[in-house]
Length: 174
Image (tube, rainbow, N blue to C red):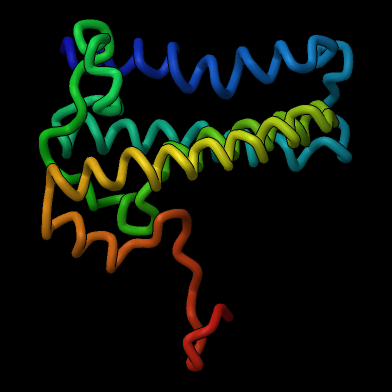
């Protein structure tokens, strides 16, 4: 039970701030622009898809990994947000991308940009993508290689960092 509470706290503190509060503060007029006309309609499924992808990823971390998304360098806060999974999670959405939580957050930000027709969300999302990529490449992946060794290296060979695109007969993207 405590694991679920910590996962919820993590979700409110990290993705909630990164994908909700910060974009809102960057565009304080978002509610005055809010509309659900056809022009803004694509934002709804993108936003909902991002939230769903994050939640499915979180569920996998808690159930299959036995931990919360608490990355190792926030250990001083583990009393509040829990511990990173003790087991490598490579099932469910993690078979198609090694970073579905980050993708979910990004989709949420870009979905809000579409929904509220606000360029600041999109610019923020591009910056966020660059930050996420740096954190993944320079902090998370070296840590996971050290923690899980060959199992993680094998997982990396089978699963792309961002998304799994179908390949045609010639090996290119179809």
